[in-house]
Image (cartoon, rainbow, N blue to C red; front, side, top):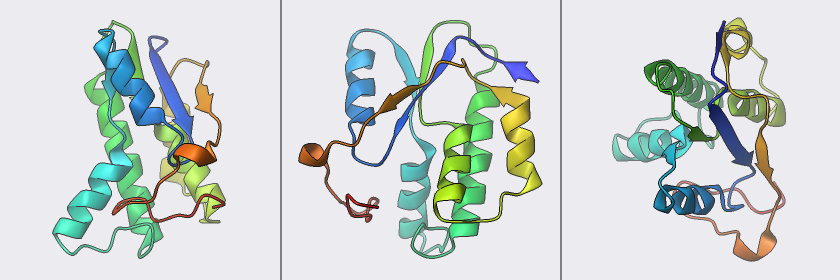
Length: 141
């Protein structure tokens, strides 16, 4: 197991201000790791791929897990304070939300790669919620 107590997850539903908060932390000289989901969606749209939350949810979730683990491992030697715009546990939450079967690869990753146990969860905020090319869910979802 790799435990990284200097790594904090900032999470919450779509459109609650996570990226905005992280950009402000960056202005204050804190480092953060961007969310993997948006980049996957952008690349899939550009390449006409189907690993998208509105197409092949299993493939999309598997890609989120792979990219989240890659980020965690790539930064495992980093010793300064580091924030993650979501993390490996968010893949679990996504799969539970859409009722995918939780596979062993995800269970193993949750046990193997540990962030700080303190997680910052941003609450839903309807007034700032917007959809876009990568975020198609409505606020209720």
